[in-house]
Image (cartoon, rainbow, N blue to C red):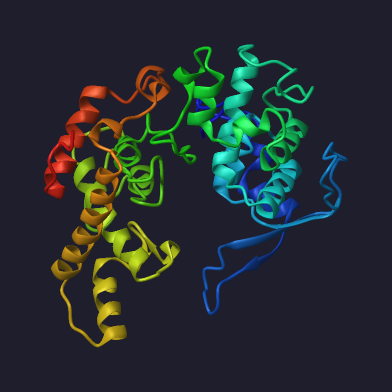
Length: 352
């Protein structure tokens, strides 16, 4: 579990913010889209939260929010070393009300916390607040300052990449992002397929373009019999490429990924082909759908190339390449070999 801004992989406060505790303390009911039996949404309530310094924006003490789900628990919890579950729910509500993504918000605050710890920034920058790891009140304050671009919040509102460029003083070396997007709660040092998926994603460190984290975590091939070793670089490119094609179609057909999950489905390739035929009345084969996915992804790549995003941007931050976690890094040479295989599968050149 990414902890203390990607410097650790275990969180001592996990038992205070995990799913079981959340369901026991906060969740009051499930929420579903129409006729869905998954009911992935969880409505959480906090009757009373600490009075927090929000000055120009007032929130009720009572909190009611859909979530927090895993990405929020990681980003505003373990990544910031925050084990206060109620404050994470409050932070989730603030993000929802003010239109902030919880993954990017947690990442940029944790980044600022490391800057504060290294004395790159001081209390003079952070609104006279101790922006230390674990300070849940500071997280709440920072969210409001970011949303309203107040003081140092105006810099953090730009995201990790640009904030690191503005702050300088060497913090660019530990700024964690890919193509400017902050990563979700899956550390690529222990998930080599995720490492490739982050690097090649057209929009940066995204877990939804490929869902590579799931086969890496389960150890099973997403669509057929076979194993995927999360620490072995070979065959990751084939898996990532196929999953990108599959989820390109899932998004195009406006299907929920929670009913099209790798290894468990229930909708996988056979189901997708049947569903397309049932809805449209047009008989198709898997190969025909794959050609559609190829055209879409080629168009996406063409757009990025037009904007100057070539292979040199398909890289990972230094922390993942140089700082070991449980003895693991993403080896740059092996990452490049995965990239070569991925481009070959896509029929692309090096795009330099």
